Length: 330
Image (cartoon, rainbow, N blue to C red; front, side):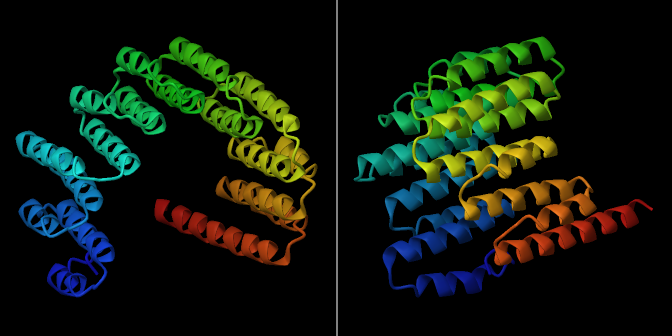
């Protein structure tokens, strides 16, 4: 209702919600919708009615980011500062860390990198700090500040987040035509990923990095990453977790358009449910690139009748969208 612009009616309904937390979340959604529509004064008025400190500070950060995107830097700074002040009222230390990470990320998205880093480095929870630093580094890379992004990423303690951030920076470098630097960053991402202790996490991250590398057009290095992901998956002792890891790898290969390899991996998955879901992912990836006949053949391999039916529906939807796209081009 708020998104449709019916703000007055939405506010009336939100203010009648008895539960304070539910009311806070409803008001946050309305305020953010107002900010996205450029109604900054009204959004800031609504946000003052939010009682929960966590929701209040989070909403202020989102509004500040919208104000910054509109080019109103000074006003955005004031909103960010207010978000930080409200965040200090959050009683739970872990919740406060999460919100501070969100504020730092919002600042980075508004290209306020210095302030974002100051906030991120003060976050006590290591996981939240790593996430904030990764998002800041990625925002810098998207803005072409590659040297600075690489400096920031070195501060990330968590190997999983560190490797993922490096891969995203490398992808931005590749997109900017800095192929040699991208190669070095991708290789470093793979090296850091191999430090991840959990074989399950290591396999998942390596599969994701492989897809990112493949999209950057580096097939040989992507294959190397997929091989490492498969090695990690084989280290997983629990059969159910191993099946999930192989399903992730198969879907990642499909996203990289390595359909033959993806099918080979999918067919090795022991758990029938995980195998069905992996085949669904492969079929959808095929449909997205227009390989509809091949996608339908994959459907025949799916043992779960519900997943099989859903996959057929998804393929039909993709085919219809493709048809409309071609008609639009004409």
